[in-house]
Image: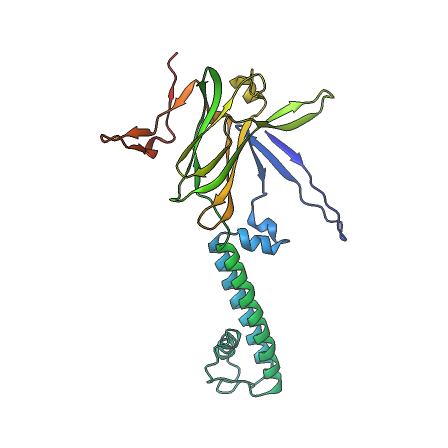
Length: 305
């Protein structure tokens, strides 16, 4: 299922954001073209923070080569203005630019004219600004807090305390704690209002427990499907017809860096197993200690009726 939509914003040039498409597959919504790196050139700072490290380093390399090529041409336009450089040698002018931009200053080549000294001054200023900007961008990328949280590949609907309950598992992959962890689950589905208007509505699912002071191992997240639940009375067919999906959002404070981290996951219709339960991952050793076996973290079994 694809939905076309346009987004508009006003500015001095009255630009219009290009048309994009909503693709809904198994209840999961994807905005085609939204994550393409080449669509962020109007916001270069965001692009440099989100582009993969390989792309970031490649852009820095291209910029560094390009700016030295430009200054090499500028030196050549000044004639024989670099001492100990071959007259008209582009290679000598290029490597002199590299030394100037990086403030290396071997002393073998140096400017001999006012024109060359002016170009050197301009390049030195640009070099200082470039180093500061690249250092700031690299630090911003390294300092971005990230969470290594996994979610079970499947969610199940099974009986818990005599009530049909939606359940999935999540675990912290790092050997530390996420403090004051908070998790929210939303049901997204297609609906038609009383006025006959089509909308894609988001419902907040109330959890049996949505907080934990120390998230270090595994966490079973549960939502009771009672009379107050948006899932009450729904079947697999109704979930498919309404293109339903579950959106999970987890936030907390990483105790190592003392910064807010977040993780998200989306469960499509095919990811929900009715009348199934998770394989138990908590076991006991011969001396009475408990341990968690993550090898079966994603495994589920049908419930015997």
